Length: 224
Image 1: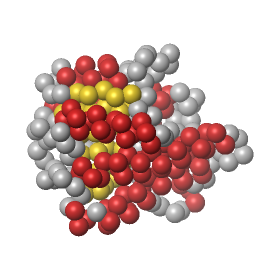
Image 2: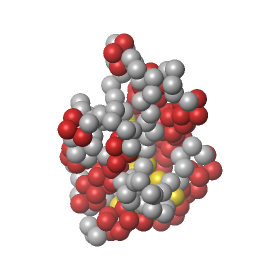
Image 3: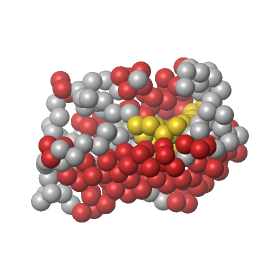
């Protein structure tokens, strides 16, 4: 899709980082943005809220709709999508950006962190897509974009980070399945993944697993 003017876009996890960068790029191109994220008050360690993100987007001359949403929960997602339809009237694009990351190995990873990654990355992506699909079917050029990697079963991609890789590949499997399942409705379902890590505040909180020197800026993702 090359023309985003007056398109209505839903982006999960768009209060900061990659999600906000994508939101601002689309806003510059004329799209209205619905921001689905949990942060509605300032975080002690992470910058940005849904309201500061909305302000930045509105300054670019489009509509922004900040909605506090935890995508692990059906009712919150359903109410968020209902609010988007009531305010924007339609949905043209869904960007499944929200994701949890933990790079502990299999012995040291607490199961609550394992559950969190799968609840957000896999279930949350599936739930948001499922809830948006009836409205995407009505769009003239609908898209779903997941921030997830190509599936590669070589052991090096699982070594040390088995749980995280499983969770991200779950998002990628949504792409493979839904792209085929909804082709007949002309809904394009794709994934986007960078070759190198992206320097975000959330990544910095991991405590040295990846050095900033090895990372690229979030803007490289939105430019893609």
